[in-house]
Amino acid sequence: MALAASLITMYSQVRVLPGLLEVYIMNRKELIEKLQSNVVQIIFTKKDGSIRVMSCTLDSNIVPPSKPTNRKKNDEILPVWDLQKGAWRSFRLENVKSISIGETTDEYNQ
Image 1 (cartoon, rainbow, N blue to C red):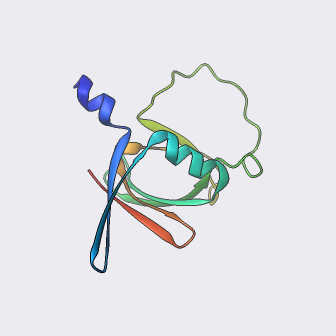
Image 2: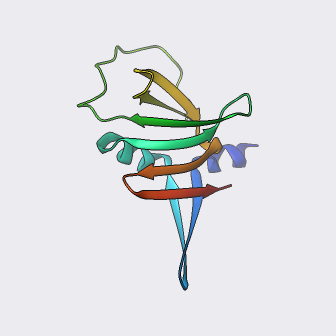
Image 3: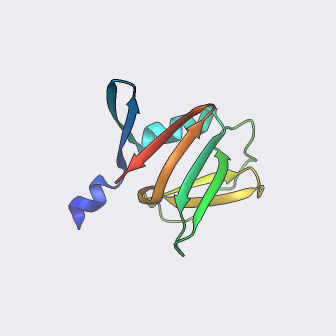
């Protein structure tokens, strides 16, 4: 299980273009970097098994200032600012199905 936990922050993306198969690996750090400068649409499976589409960001020009907390850091979960709810929400990285930034959509296969 320790090995699975250490790999949980990596996802393989496969994009098929005419005559080309491109494989890309995105980790937690890269996703955070995209969120810090973009509004991102993330499709993921919720804890109850339903599918959720969320427009979110970590852009400091959009996210309100937050107070420090004593919460234990969990690298398997990513907190983000949900633009529709106007509140902090989080999702498990292992449950991400796709990420859209602008007109680009990245499919994630576990």
